[in-house]
Length: 492
Ligand code: ADP
Ligand code: MG
Image (cartoon, rainbow, N blue to C red; front, side, top):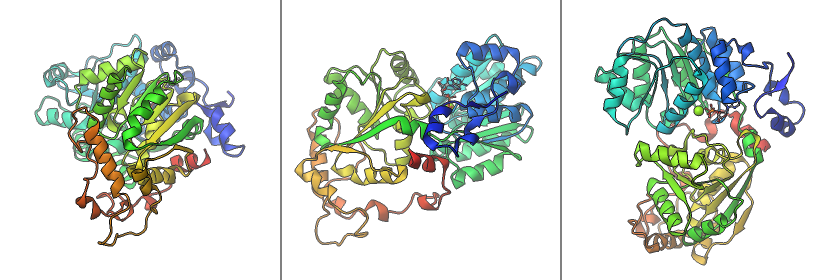
């Protein structure tokens, strides 16, 4: 056995210099050495998995030995196999079939897309193994899910809300469940699933092995982990430093009216082969997709208001290259893994700067290079500063804003904390522009359907971002423990 760089390790070594790489090297060379059965090894080979990623190398052996896992891992680190393979391996040892109305393993995820991806991945690893799975997801036929559960399944992959629904309805009993996975736990908490998650874990009872994965260890996640895990082995995946480092990031200042044209200009470049365009809201995503279609581009949109079938179709078309552009919202895109995305375009910045990092992580995966281009209008300067503060770098900026929106640029960041009642805020004019743009784009979208702050007099009383109260239950950003992610981004 010799040292081999884990997944993406080379780039990290180059990036972090000489002292850091050691802990990023995996001592395990092959999946075989992780103790996986031959059937799964064959499945992995077929799936093209030659070497375990860091999280896989670290998390699989303890789970095979029956330990709980606390995994801190970003999207793209290979979590699916990290929790999936030990479960499949245990299921292979089990006799007979699952009892009716029960599931031997339960995987909780925040979004439907993620569930579908996990199902596909597990099936490919399983190879010739007989495996029954069910997806229990909101927005899909409940009846079909109930019928599948009635027969009993090996693995149930579910969003917490719908699952709790079916448990409450006595369509599924959790007392036979032996394996519980919480994937992207931070996001499930963000989405308000804490209640169902805890209730589900309580119903399963203590005779279970649990793995919890989260991109961050925010205090709420740590608290949840403490409640659900028994003496867990803590594993950490490589932070997204590689990802961020190889992604070329830039900002184009653009009046809100001009964004559509700016996007068209960008898309005229054939180098933008596979593009994901992010908008902040569902309505925004629909509007962008609609305008793209009018402007002659092939685009598909995914967001929470679309049916599961429409979302799957859009994703498939994008993944297999039939559709060049995917328009998405943050939540819908969470955890999606489509290889080969060359460009991420932020049509609007997200409210939460951490979503910027998640968004741009869609490109530049597995060491490939990628580009992230962010269109910023006058009203988004504060959000851009938040992003730059989070990633600890100033993004190269081009373009100009029209007069009204430009005025807001020169407005100082945080002060004055409370604006004097007299005198208009300097960015009021910019927002008027934005309002006009929204009214004037001729696509029939209702004004302010995108939840932006209201125009006119009401706006004046609105405190600046920094003086607004923090979200409930969430500690102040700066008091949260430093994360690998931030440090790593800073080195990029
Ligand atoms: P995560 O759940 O952490 O976001 P995934 O499990 O979805 O990560 O894996 C990310 C991508 O990397 C997927 O396309 C997956 O097929 C690929 N992948 C994961 N592990 C390996 C491996 N050991 N070898 C090759 N590709 C891998
Ligand atoms: Mg995943």
